[in-house]
Every structure is written in C-alpha cells, then in structure tokens.
Length: 264
Image 1 (cartoon, rainbow, N blue to C red):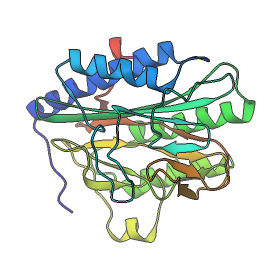
Image 2: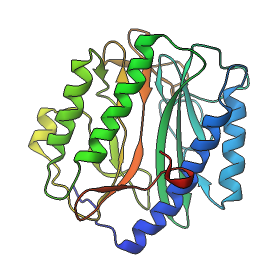
Image 3: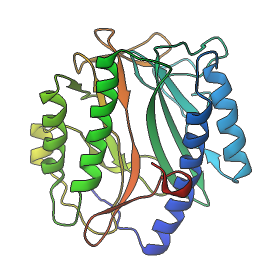
C-alpha cells in the first residue's frame, strides 16, 4: 500500500478543488426542499462546477455491473439509498425524506470529495438521531486523526459510537486516499476488521484522506439495485452519509472541503 505524502503546494491545489465541492454542497443545502427534484440539484451542481473551471469527477464513471456510465455530477441518495443514487427529474423530494448528496470535483489536476445528508422538512426523531450520529462519526475522525495514530484506533472509535447508538456501520463502502485521482490508497474503513488490523495505516503529515462514514438505521448490510449503481440498505431502513477531504497536519487535521466562510 503506497500512500502519497503531499507537499504544501499539492494540498493547496486539493483545497482549491475541495472549495468548489464545498460551494456545491452549500448551495444544494440551500435549495433542497419538498417539491425539488434531484435533477434540479444536479443541474445546479453542473453550473457551479463549470463556472469554477472544474470537472465533475462522478460524471462518466464506468461500472461493469451497470448498463451505463454514471450520468451526473452528484450522487443523490434518498432514505434507504446509501450511496450512488442517480439524480432524476422524476424523483421529487417530499417532506420527511432524508437526502444524501455526494460531490467530487477535479480542478487543475487535483481532486476534492465530500458528502452531506440533509433532512427534508420534519423527519422522524430516530432518523434525525441517525443524521446526528453519522455527523459525529465524521467529527471523531477529523478530531482524532494526527501523525502517529493508527487508523484502526480512529475507526474503532467511530464504530463504537455508531453501534452504541444502535446503528449499523456500512462495511462494503469505505473512505479512501485522494489527490490526483478520486480513489487512491489507502482504503479507510469506518470499522475495525481483521484485514485492517493486519494492514493498518500509520497516519503521517501530508496524507490527504476522504473520510466518509455511512451509517444505517438498522443492519449494516446493503444490496445494489437493478440499475447497477444505487446501493440500498438490506432491510429498507434509512441511511446517512457524511464526508470530508482532510489533510493530516503537524498536530491534527485540516478540512479541505469546507464551504463558504469555512462552513462545514
């Protein structure tokens, strides 16, 4: 496993891409409401990325299990959809939904990637708790990561926090390194496994990581829908997804995908 150590100049380039991602998510958060379609969100994302001179990382990604390349600049996953939901003009948000939006941008040769999960109107209190706990898992990773820490220590704290709340941490999809490509080494599970303990990651200054907990209200198990893209919870219960691209610094981390004015 060869994990890149980025220079300060490279981190600034990743930050520039990440700021475009942050701007997209900030704007989509503002307009996501009952009556809006997920295609409306994707169209606005397209415009923001184009105006910034960037490239949408997700659009055109190939998947051997699907009949078509991914068609949009964002993944828009609703309720029991965990990740990779396809935006559609036929998919209108309704009160009580939760919506996960994942966005990746390449700008001047470097990539940024982040995700948020939003309540649409008033949601069930247990679903609201799911959103809060998932966000807390990301906060744990940002707060606990620093040079000299093993990733298994951080993943263990994330897993424990979710499972103590009664939720399932998705096993099949994990975080990743990021830089010149969207997906680079290392893999970053949000749980501890024998595989992770046998090939643990020692964090070092200059590593840039896309940390993305995906947490289900029920079982951690998932399945893929008939379109070959959309990942669903196996039990049909809701799922939440949060992500930031972060850089490991001298004594902690820095978020590279914050929105305008540093908003996360």
